[in-house]
Image (tube, rainbow, N blue to C red):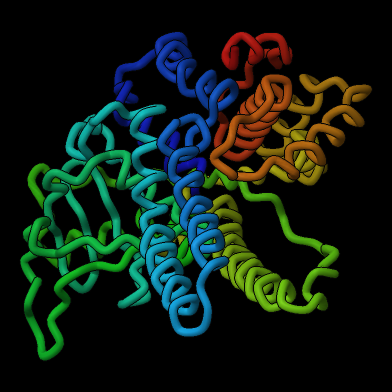
Length: 400
C-alpha cells in the first residue's frame, strides 16, 4: 500500500489519466522515479534528522543530568525525560508527512487531485475496524458516510496510508472538519477517526472498487458521482510469503518486539492471500463465461514476485484467445533471459518500503520488471497491447 499511495498521490497531482499519452505520462512520473531513487522521501528531509537528533538529545541530557543527582531527584529526571521522549516519539507521523511534503507534494492539498479520475487513498480506522477512503472530491467512511476532503494536505493523506504500525503512530483526524452527514449520530458518536496504514484492513485496496456501486446506492455520494468500475487490475508490489528465519523471536527482550512484528506479518499475508484468491477465482469465472453479477469481474492480477513468463506459460496449452495471446507473449520474451528475470525477481523481493532512496540500478530494474510483467499479464488476460520489451537503460534514464 505504501508505494502505491505515494505513486497515486503524485499521479493524481501531476497528470490527467484521461488524456495523457504514454509519452506525456512518462514525462509526468519521471520526477517521482528520480526523487525516490536519488533522495528518497522520509530520509531526504533535514527535519527528519533534526527530529532524530532531538530524541537522542533528550536521552543524553537526562543521562548527564543524573550523574550529580541521587534518589528521587534522579528518578524524577528520568520520568520527565521519558514522558518528553514519548510525546516526541508520538509526533513521528507528523514528521513523515512534513518530509513527504518537502520531497514531493510541496504544500498541495488533497482536494487538488485531478477530478477526472478518482485517485482514492486507503486508510484503516482502528476504532471501527473498517477502511476510510480519502480522495480529491470526498472522504468516505461506512460509519460516517460521504464527507469532504476539507483542507487535509495530500502529504498527510499519503502518510496516513503508509503509516505502518510500529513505525508510525496512528493519525487522529476530527470528523467535524470533513462534514460527515452521520457524525454525532447514534448512542456512541464518533468524534474522530484514528487512522493507520490502509494495508491493515486491505493491502491491495480492492475493497473500494468491489463495493463502489453499493456505496453509491446507499446514498449521499457527491455530485458528480464517483466514476464507475469497468475492470479491476490489481498490482501487488508486496513480495510473496514463504518460510523465513525468525531467530530473533527467541532472543530476550528483543524477541518480544520481534514476535509482535512476526504476528503482524502473518496477519498481513493471510488477509492478502484470502482476498487475492477470491479475486483470482472471480477473474477465472468471468473468463469462463460466468455472467452472474455477484461473480462477474473483468480484470487481472500482477504480483511482483513473479516473472513475466509464469502466467503465459500456465495458459499456453489451450485453444482459446487467451492461449493465443500467451503464445505471442512467450514469443516476445527471450527464453535465454529467463534466469536474468528470476534473478531480478529475487533482488526486487528484497526492496523494502522504508521511505529511503532506492539505488538507481535497482530502481531501474524494479520499474522494468513491473512494466513488463504488467504488460504481459494484461495482454494475456485482457488483450492489452503487446509492445517491445524495453531495456534496463531505458528505465535508468528515469531514475537519475
